[in-house]
Amino acid sequence: MRRVVIAGNWKMHKTQAESLEFLQSFLPLLENTAEDREVILCAPFTDLSVMSKNLHGTRVRLGSQNVHWEESGAFTGEIAPSMLTEVGVTYAVVGHSERRQYFGETDETVNFRARAAQKAGLKPILCVGESKQQRDAGETEAVITQQLKADLVGIDLSGLVIAYEPIWAIGTGDTCDSKEANRVIGLIRSQLSSADVPIQYGGSVKTANIDEIMAQPEIDGALVGGASLDAEGFARIVNYQSA
Ligand SMILES: O=C(CO)COP(=O)(O)O
Image 1: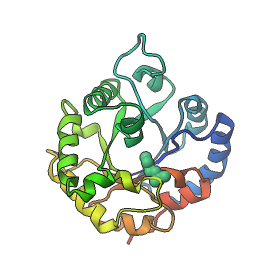
Image 2 (image 1 turned 180 degrees about the vertical axis):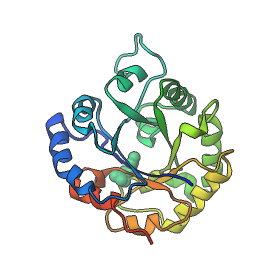
Image 3 (image 1 turned 90 degrees about the vertical axis):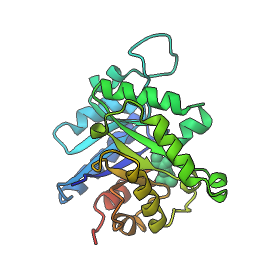
């Protein structure tokens, strides 16, 4: 039985004060959330410590948005796995398309990060997905196959979440049709040697489309950007109505 995993990726949003304000509104809205749903907030590094204290004893897990592969050293601007585990982080997003696109992340560095995360006891949320140009050229399957092959070298599938995030659907309001997302996620699953890896969909997920997305049989959750910034809205997403 695969787990349902709903994660908010705040990207570069929310100060500490704003993160606490969010939790104050958000946590009470989870009182009736189905037990089998894992709820994660991937917050900026500066929020993690204070959020961790405020999430103690709750069902919400913390995620970082990146992690380096070394434990320490001259890597200005990076964060070590142990720095994250020390403050109570459980998950680490790796290979987000914004990191690949704007910060020179390659499949090789994504793989280093994912492996280091697992070694430190963090669960990677590995993002894969094609660009608009690649989709239009009919390369979706090939791109994703290549990403999975390179990103998963040496990865223990039992401690992994995968997010299928078509780049053209991120932050555009242009959600991937849920049946098409289901098809691609099925394809991703067919390439894994374990049937138990939760695979999320990400890209313009919102309160208006979450029920339809989660009704798809291959889709095990969502990685939510913009719509995770609002406590009521994200709570509605977490509390999606199952078919
Ligand atoms: O990139 C995303 C989550 O990681 C998706 O962002 P949006 O939900 O804002 O489209």
